[in-house]
Amino acid sequence: MLDEPLIISYEIISDLTWQMLKAARCKDWTTLAGIEDYRAQLMDAVTTGKLGGTLTAVEQRRKTGIMMQVMQDDIEINALAKEHLGKLRNRVRVAANEQYNREPYLKAA
Image (tube, rainbow, N blue to C red; front, side):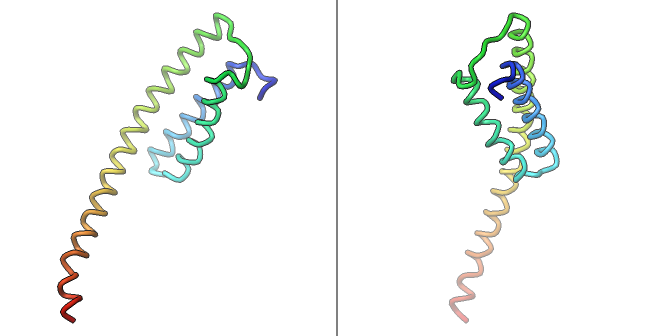
């Protein structure tokens, strides 16, 4: 990746974000988490300058468009994840309540 123009890294980030969004829409949280880890590493490399390179004015405008799309996709991913986590929290709460309600009967037996 070091030999590629820096803009390619931003395009890969965009593609990874799109894959994450597709996974979130399918409720495939395992796939999403795996892609997210890779994307985070790439984002870190890009933002800290580890990849080197500079962007031309045209590439800078392209980067702006890419990152705007990434942010929009992230907003949808976060909304889907928040919905999923809310449902998961409710399931855990119900299970805990059921266990709590059964406990006196288990002790009596």
